[in-house]
Image (cartoon, rainbow, N blue to C red; front, side, top):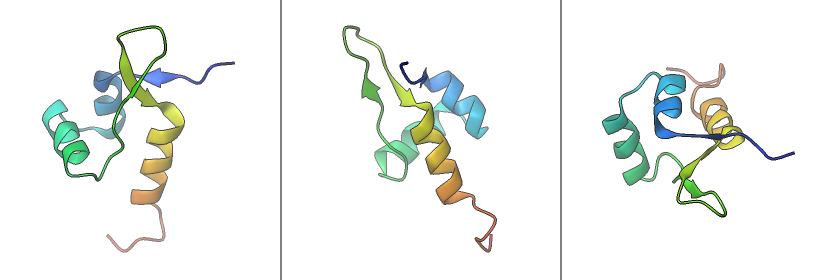
Length: 64
């Protein structure tokens, strides 16, 4: 079973940020870059990568 791949719009919705903010996070190296989906011109983020990033950056243990 293939893992779900999210487009930029879905990632932005999941993170509640704009596409510009997503681009800035990615450009600064604070968010993973999208991956190419084999056999297509489509690029996206694996759902597991996005959820892992959320867990790492917004865990309950952090003093925000």
